[in-house]
Image (cartoon, rainbow over all chains, first blue to last red; front, side):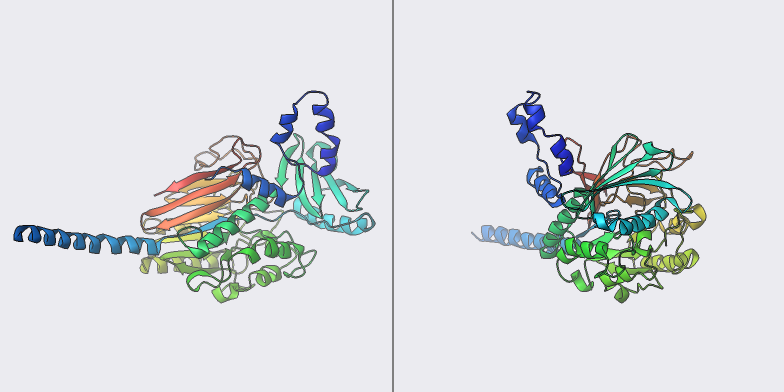
Length: 51
Length: 419
């Protein structure tokens, strides 16, 4: 998941979704947030199945 | 004993004959195999590195962009926000006056568009990692190809629109777009070119290359070997041959918001370019160069955005007479999506999803229009991609490598064509 940092801050998942038990702490490991395209590409390449 | 020896020598002779027959054939096949990649419309829209004390400059720059996108007659409302911590432009939102639901909201990072959301459904039109992913993948593949042509592409073709415009500087050193493209892509390709080619990157000019840079200072300073291949600001067509294939590049011309799908080039004009094209195809036929790849920006067949080149300015009637003797593939861009057609034996591929903002809207095709073979009428989604073409004695294979941010499998390879 990617979003501009100021939006990410507003939707602070840890303080809202996790605190309200909408998700579990393990769910927090299912995504990563960044607004840096190169970092996103690193994430995609590290997690893409080899084709 | 003699009989055993005689059988042994017979077997040896047979093995040698088999070896002599098959091994050179396999070696010859390997020698002719190569691959290349194709992508286009990779420029990000609008570099806006402005701070809160530069609002006049930001508005002037935006005014230029608006002229291009909407023409001088449409009034546009804007809202601009600066980050209170850094003072840098944070986001810009604009919409045609009186139609706020048709907004486009651009989030920026260090002046570069990072994410674009547009109304009325808040669709994502751009995530800049699409472009970054394509650059990274092509560079990585090209490095493998430079070491071993059977493991990766030998060179790249581009269907146009590598830059946005020349308003903030024209040449590679002055233009933020060309400088960025050079730094993050071209300078990372392996040095030199394969087998006498002067480089590994061969573009056709798009309308953005000439926008506020009529003499192509940016393109010619960024890809400085193009004049060696016959391409100049006055003559924007060129060709080269590589391992039995001919590659031809044409120029569809400047952007005209009043007539965006036309063949507007005057360098030379349409009729003169078609005469050159016919001559180069005839030459390919006589040289028994059976496979030809032709690249030009505005699409010959298209159901997106501005649609195809009009029939009277469309190369298809000039290509058709050669299609029975030459294998012809055409690469186009301009509309920021992917489309595939097969018409009269000629393959047409629109490769316009190379990193710029995406176009997800298709128009209803006219009656009897050739079937579009990529989306096949299905709803379109964010899809950033490049094409890989493998040419070998066994035949030609084309497949897309694509990144779909919202798909279950974000990175995929999709075969488009196999002989």
